[in-house]
Length: 312
Image 1 (cartoon, helix red, strand yellow):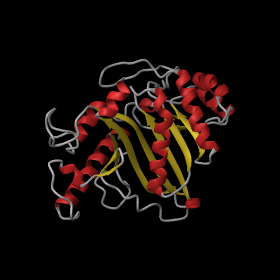
Image 2: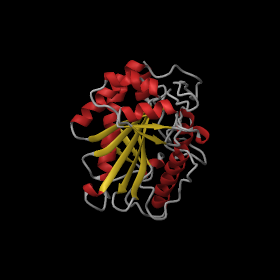
Image 3: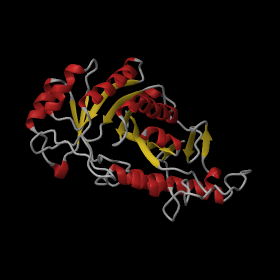
Image 4: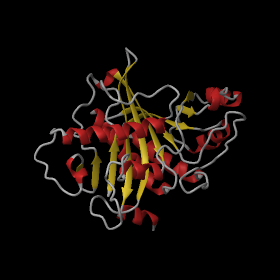
């Protein structure tokens, strides 16, 4: 089964999670998901949801299942944006997570983008930035130091051929008009030089993480200017949704949502291991005012038989 996790719009009045400038996206993501789950549960307990039969699986009252997907919490995608589409700049960042086969990214990309389009009630986004697992930008010397950290330890960095394969999918979506511009994350000048000859649609943005406020390397500044690539910075982490964190978020206990069963033989939740697949962050800014009207996250995790099939 697919578990689709959502934060709702973080910019709505009274939302309990406010990200500090120095707070990393994984902290904002987890806190926002947990707050949204708790709000949905509280709404059900206070009588906001009617005619929902009590079952051992209490999550059924505040989630919604469509085919093989469980939406956590239930959402009707009813709000959208308040003004015309032309009034907004919509930026999306898609995190491909470590440990997930690159062959799944075509489906993952479309799933993530479709959810954002559905949430905002639009048919296109202005910029999609993709973050590949295992790539870490080293601002000190513009080297392509590649590391991978996960719950199980270190793994090999993302394969260059798989990045090209994934980019083909993104180019297809861009050519269909779903995405106006494409961007990458953590690409230094050497990796960009190797990557660009394989593209039909060049990235217009390179988003890099400057640890400890380091200066952008001159080699990257010059190369990006030559190729007309805009350099942006971010404060996101590599593994934005680790397996252990996902398990704690969805499991039983004080901090969990009670989606996963409390024991292998219990029928109070979904049985099976959970495997996070991707995370997507979206931001819609009103152009003439520079105001963020909508911001949020979706994440997808597989559980049960989906995970077993993935591991085979």
